[in-house]
Length: 443
Image (cartoon, rainbow, N blue to C red; front, side):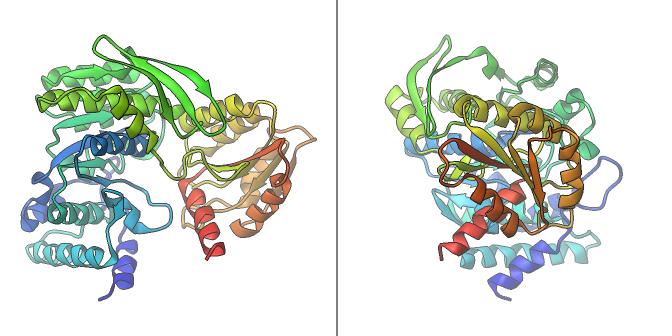
């Protein structure tokens, strides 16, 4: 078997294991598999992150800080935008095709053994998690940062025994699996909290905060609420945000991050608080002002307010909470510009409120609708009809299921016009397909 065949095999695995109601992925079979592999997930210090939005960004901020402190860091995130190997990284390098194939074969062999003992196949995400742990054991980083795939309590990554846990913004998403209230979802995310292990949280919700603090208390886990840390914006530009952060323990002035996405302030603050608590656990010192500036200056997270052209940005916002933060960032940075939207979405998302938010919040001059390349896609025509119900007669709508065609049409509308901006949102799949097209066009 070669690399391409291994990728095809993995992509054919159901994303979730067969289960009842909200039990989207029990870990019994995965536990047997990890034991067969020699428990690689237990051999490297881990940091575990759950949340509705901001997990990947927070993970990357933490990675930047730890690397500035001289640590070798691995990171496991999802989904990928273009290349499946984006999910497994050590330092700044994706897992190589050769190592990917080796890890795949190692996990596949172990799975065949447990199936021979009467166990069932594991899911797509569980397979990727197992591969990542095998790779990280081989590369021996000082820390590995793991992002949950969905929820927390039943997630494959919850087999970890982390040194610290992190819970980011919580909102309504994946309600079929996690519950239809913020309280229910917070309970699922809080499932990653471990006994006597600090949890840093920045949920953006008083309801969620109550759940997190209650669960933490039951596990004798120190609960650190980042919302009690003050951070202010000093300056906001097209390319960056200058902010300051302080609490009773430390103070940082004029930290610069290379993005104008306001929601990244929450993620940066969460990362700083997490790392300082981690350094306290290990007897180290707080990150210095200079280290903080250097670390956060290296931050980049593709598909999150990423400008692929000077006035064309892609953002993976795919739920109400994320769309609200996207609108806030666009309006703050580009208040006087005409707004255009390119939108596509998956059928399992609550897209009707998202569409209304985009229309009411951005008041677009033009809307372009397309269809993601997925079994979960919704037709462009249907989504265009929903947009039409929320706009005035001066806003034009164009739709086509061909992403390449409609993206080209949208770019014609804005490229070369300094008073216009195109915002591409609704799905990380859309962001990934746009990036793939640009990469192929550039050779």
